[in-house]
Image (cartoon, rainbow, N blue to C red; front, side):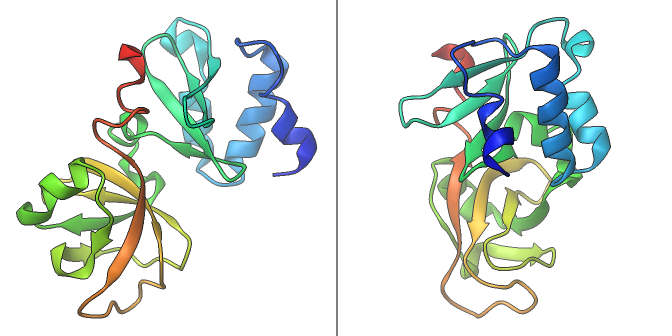
Length: 172
């Protein structure tokens, strides 16, 4: 993302204007399917305004009145778990067994023994960690290529999980 695109959402205004939304849609189109940005940023669908907010850890979050939609991570916008429940195909997935679920919900990094199956991914990709039923539990950054995984070791670093500040945004 270049500096000009980055500045579109970080002005003093808390509510995004039409030009800012169009620019954000264009930026999202570089990373995600076009249907995603159209749906996520469709004000008429949500019948509300799209806003930005800074969280306590200085992350930027893009929201509607009730739902966090995207959060910023190293100048890239990442869909929240709220959105991934509707658009599960946006990111590659890693499926974990029942024993790993409680750890993932609480924000633990993902280690190899809990993994049942995975989509192909590259080092530093953003992936969704799901349970066996396909429910998103967390989002992580991969620490290695995912063609063949080792039998041991950390596979992802968690960046967003159920019950974290982003998930609980509407309660803040």
